[in-house]
Length: 288
Image (cartoon, rainbow, N blue to C red; front, top):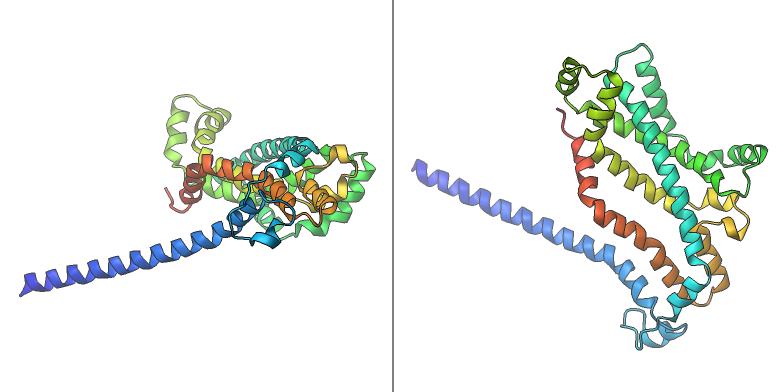
């Protein structure tokens, strides 16, 4: 009788597990379809002629496939906008990661009087809306002579990425066992050697997560770029989207081509580093 009860419980739990997995798979498929549909729509319609969407329908395959949209986008200075965005995002990310790592280490691994106060202040800065400071930063940028220069974007990008980055990286570094540092100190390592040889290499997953998360935000940022940059030779990729939309307001396929080329770098970056992103997000969830 007892064995029969155990078997019945096992079968019931197995059925529940199958039902749960089936529901999860269904939700995953639905979410995948909802996520891919706009992207599929964008790519497919980027290969049409101007009025093919009206004649063929938006979800039919292009007939014929029209590649001239991409040729026109590339020949109208797209790579110039692209290169400037890469420069701004790359420099901003490097500065943000370096400053975040240097700030998070003492907050996570050292005890001093102002530790809690500094950490609380940094967390409080996360609640400040980015665009509330647009006018003060614009006045400061004009005063120091950086208006209409590519470098004017780096300061705001780094400053507004720091609170969240320090908050996440501090929590991440707290999960690294202290025994690692203690063993290194026994071998003669000081604080700086511990940071560069122990903590920093072990924080690669967290740093990769911050790089992807903030990189997407910086890549797509429009308000500061539109306010601080005026000359066409200084504008970044988000401003190119607005310019192409203005010049080709009635040509939807060419706008789709610009959008496709704009999002591809972030998609490729995510595909390459998705394992590090998941590890970084999960590592801080378990202590020790």
